[in-house]
Image: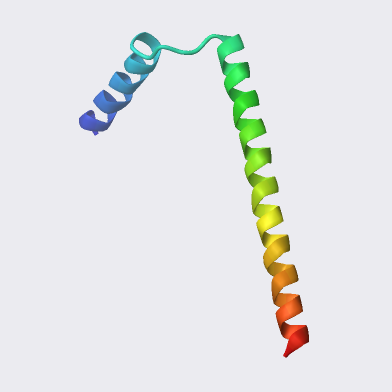
Length: 63
């Protein structure tokens, strides 16, 4: 039980004193970058899916 208590106390100390937290504007710009990249990735995957769907529909219609 002492090891668990020491682990928790060391973890709290590290989070409070040793971790460098980003400023709000850095955090906001990173969040916007992730949002835009996720949207672009989703659109690319959607277009690829649409292309495969149309190609397979054409293939099944032909045979």
